Image (cartoon, rainbow, N blue to C red; front, side):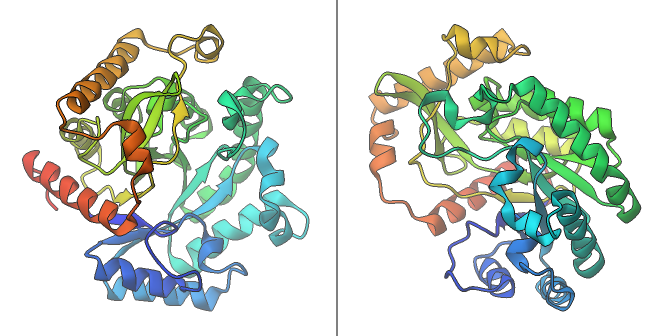
Length: 346
């Protein structure tokens, strides 16, 4: 299992090219880069440039993964660049991205997600799951229909669209989408720190998605209250509450060649988890009480660590100066240590 980094969040200059980002990742000791979108590499899908990026990754012995965009028709207005790419047709824009990523860059695993984080919205409205103009059940139906539109193109090119366990969707729902549309064209991008926002234990979620996981976004988290609201805050891998030996053991057993991409993120976001809120609970029909108990246990364990002075309080963690390079370095070391403990090749 090779350890890499999210290309959009590695410390870099605003005008850095994709090739420069690959070089920066290599210089940090990373073994691959996961660009969130092929348009981050080339907004115009320049085939020559994409081929150069492929050649650069190969010369540095880096794995190379890319992404597409959102696959939720209710969210397409938030990606006008994709619609422009398709000359007014969002579907055509996505197809052009699939074709360019595969044909020019040789990428066969492509990230997709179902919604954006709605920064600045109050409470649960940061998640599209709680939209009232578009009920979540309707969004899931639309997502499946759209994925079925793209499936023949993905199948023809031998690529997988890997749905991220983003904050708005559960791992149960993603697995159902993969199995409905077909695991020959759909996979999972497993984000280890997002599933807890939907009331899921990362170890249990790993068991659900591991058979279909082809890409990862890895970071840790801590849990606790801020201003009377219980929620999640990001942490470097190994400094939070995830049992990494268990998660990596599950993933390795299914796919020993799975790329492990660190997604560094600051601790500023405190996302609400309404484990005691009937409104929130009603929006989670797959909620497992054993996993809820596990989440409560993780929160209690972290609170005990802070009381003993072994870990910062959430308020202090959120106020600390964020260092992206340090986050990546600490996380990579923790991943290597965990892989060594479980006997996985690094």
